[in-house]
Length: 435
Ligand SMILES: O=c1[nH]c(=O)c2nc[nH]c2[nH]1
Ligand SMILES: [Zn+2]
Image (cartoon, rainbow, N blue to C red; front, side, top):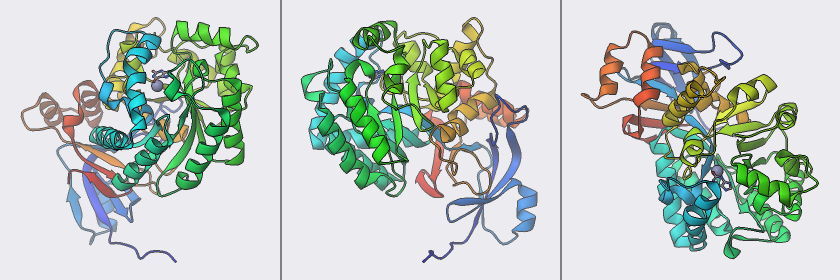
C-alpha cells in the first residue's frame, strides 16, 4: 500500500547544485538566481527558473527563501562519532593524538548513558553544519552504535555507520576478537541496515590496529550482507604507514592489507590517502572505491598535502570528510576552503573553483556512498537541502546582497560561511533544523 500524497510545496530561492562532476564536465554547475524547486512527499518533482515552475504549478503554495543560498545538504564521508567532545587537540601527529586525545575519550563510550549524550552532541553538530548524510565511524562498543542509530533515526539524519573493530595496539578495552567482531556486526546489520534511512558500514579502524583475523571477519560480513558499505583509514601519516609495513611484511603496500582480505570495492571509502603509491591509486580506480579527503584534519595533525592531482589522473573518486575530531569541526564549507588553500599552496595542486568545492561537499559524497537519490537538486532526488542565510550586518550577508552572480555568492559561502549561517536544513523534505 502506498501512502497518500501530500500537497506539493514550491521553494523559491537562489539555488546552486552540481548535477554533474566538474572535474570531468565543463558545465557542471547549475545556478538559478531566482529558482524554483517543487517538492512533494520529500522528493524534488521539478526544478528550474521560478517563473517556469510557477507557470506549470500555479496552485502550489510557495515558501520564499530569497535572500540566502539554497544548496543540497552536505555529505560528510568521514567523521568519528566518539570524538565530538575532543575536537581541538591541536599540535600532535596522528599516533600521539590517538593515544592522548581520541582513545581515552573513545573508551568512555562503554558507558551507555555517556554514549547517548555524545550521539546527541554529534548529530546536533552535523545537522547544525548543514550535513544531511554522513558516513560515520561509530564506536568500539556495540551499545553505543545502537544508541547512535536510534538518535539518527529520531533526528532524520541519513547515517551510514558501523561498529569500529580492532584487536591490537590501541587500549585493551577497545579490543575485540574476530568472532565477536563478526557476531556483533551481524546483529547490528540485521537491526539497522536498511532501517529507515540507516545503512551499515563495516569499519575496521585501520590496519595498524587490525590483525588479518579481524580483516577476515570484516570480509565475511561484507560477503554475507551484500550492500553494506566498507570504510577504514589509509596512508595518513608516515609513521603509521611504516608500522603497517612492519605488521604486514607480505603486503605490497597499505592498500594491499585490505585488498588481500577482499575489502576494496565499489562500496569502499578509505579516509585520507595522503601518501599513496601509484599501484594503490591504480587499484582504487579499478575497483571504483573512494578516497575521503579530510583537509582540516590533514592540516591539524600535520599529516601532509593530499595529492588530488594524482587521484584525478589515476581516476580515483574523491569525496570530502570533516574527520571530527582530528578535524576541526563539522562544517564542510570549512573543509572546502581548506582543500582550496592546500591545493593552492602545494606544487602541482589542482585549482578548485566554487563548483568543485560544492561537488566535493555534495554529489561526490552521494556517489561515494552509492546513494543516487541524494547529492543534487535533480528531479527524482530527495529534498535534502541547506539554506544559508547569514544574519543581517555580517560580512557574508553583505556579500550575498551585493554578489555579481550566484557563483560569487557560493565562493563567499565557502570562504567565510560557518554553522551560524545555517538557517534551515531539510532531509527527505522534513525540516530538521530551523524553519
Ligand atoms: O584521523 C584519524 N582519526 C582516527 O580516529 C584514526 N584512527 C585510526 N586512524 C585514524 N586517523
Ligand atoms: Zn578518521
